[in-house]
Every structure is written in structure tokens, then in C-alpha cells.
Length: 136
Image (cartoon, rainbow, N blue to C red; front, side, top):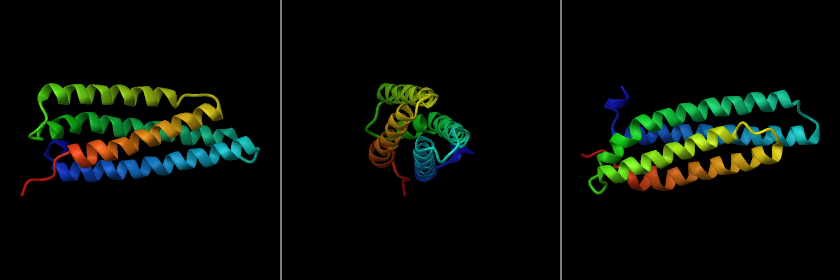
């Protein structure tokens, strides 16, 4: 089914995943505040971070499958450039996912800020400028 998605459909799906990931990041930050204040059991935060890692991993797997063909469809991008972009992107995903395994609230906040920044960058560069629109 993914191979049959148009560039616009890919963009819509990825944007929806970004919105959900941002909501999960906000929940993690709220829970971290609660843990630091002594109002929330750390188990709730750990559970939410685990959910975020699963959602981010699923998002990454989707991007790894759909970005290369969609970017290759862009007239101005060459195969070597696309391959390098996707490889760098995959490595950044793996690093962020690994960093979510942190054990301190200040380190978690840093990773959450990095993840939010990463999603913002994807929105600006991959989903707006580089992902081609459906051809009519």
C-alpha cells in the first residue's frame, strides 16, 4: 500500500505522525515536571517515554520506506544526493531513539527538545520544500 501512496498522501501521513509525536513529547515533559515536583510516579513517565519511543520508531520505519522513492521522484534531486540525505536522516533517527533511553529528567528534556527540533526541521525541509506534490 505504501508504494501506491502519492507524494501528497505521504506528506499528509508524515505530518499527522509529527503532530502525534509532538503531543507525546508534551505529555513526557508534563510528566517529567510532575516527577521532579514529586507529584507523579516515575512509572507513568517511563511508560509515556516507552510509548514515544515506539511511535518514533514506527515513524522512522515509515520514513525509511517512503522518503527515498518520493525524493527520487523530485526532478532536481539526484540518486546519490537522495541516498546520502536518507542515510543521514536514518542515522539521526537512530541516535535520537537511543538517547530516549536516558535516566535523568534533565537529559530527557534535552532529548525531547532535540526531537521536537528534528520534527520542525523535517517539516521545513522534507515535507515542504523537498517532497514533491502530486502531479496533475
